Length: 416
Ligand code: GP9
Ligand code: MN
Image 1 (cartoon, helix red, strand yellow):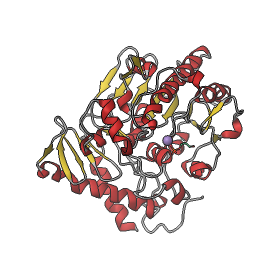
Image 2: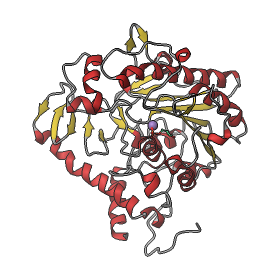
Image 3: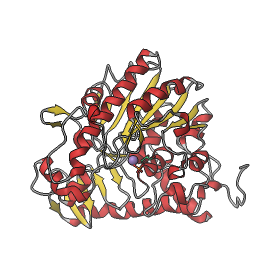
Image 4: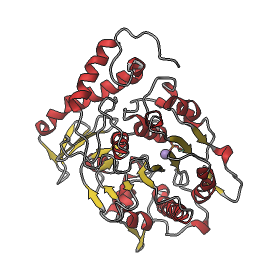
């Protein structure tokens, strides 16, 4: 209802930040977003049997802005939850998938916002269009075009597991990408590195791991394959002259290895056990921003605590889009006056000094349990923030918001 929206607006206004020094540095450029299936941060700069697991990403990071304290914040909606976070900077729901339950809500998603700046928006993903209710939800988010499985040539030879192999997916996407008006905002959702991590022998570039978890064992070759597929895609864009005027935003969508594999995971990480603290740390996923001509000259590793909720304000800031009136819970990952606090969907949270999970406060530097009262000051804010976001989704409150202010007494939706 209306009173709650006013309260939420006040909360968000109080959190509003000054634009960072990166504001507008990618203004008018094409945006290529790559959602990297099940990619966790622990494989970055790691080896298996002496071989790098992500050699391309390791190199790319050296030519990019790389956030090494970035968390996924998804719930049961998995990839779709990460998309929801990306486009709206709202939290997904504690139960179920918001893509199914609230697909006909009013949203103020990035595709809709940047339409006003002349952007064409699209999604590339070789799966059935109705999977995760994407076809319906993408309309609500304002996407101009969804290149689903019907845009691709898929056969037995070029498929594995869930469908088209990532290398084929990217290769076939190039011609589709060329059909688009510029500037474009295009999201590519990879698929091969999906549970149960199946891969043809000829595509295996590193060994499987050896442990009692077949899942963890198989994870490494499929991660390595996805890394190679992304490398090939970027090289192809260079060949086609489609690289220079584009910025690249890459992030992991959610974990790939669940807590059911803790024993094998502790073996791989060389730890005695995986504590609840470690489990939260394992929710880190890579987040990389690459701007040709900028990040290659001045790469940065940014260790500030950030999460998928920050993607929208960060991308819009790079594009020079003012978000001071936009309803969003994240903040520009480059802003410096920011409270370092990232909230996971289950209420766990991470600050620069502490990790809170399962009602226990941990010292982030040591991973050891510490005094509850160090975490206590954040607990109320965390609950408020998740509640406010849920209220927006459950109450479809953005239908009352005209882009600058809350409309008193507004009963009808604007021309929908
Ligand atoms: C399905 C793909 C994977 O189209 O995005 O979904 P997930 O199971 O990871 O949510
Ligand atoms: Mn996924």
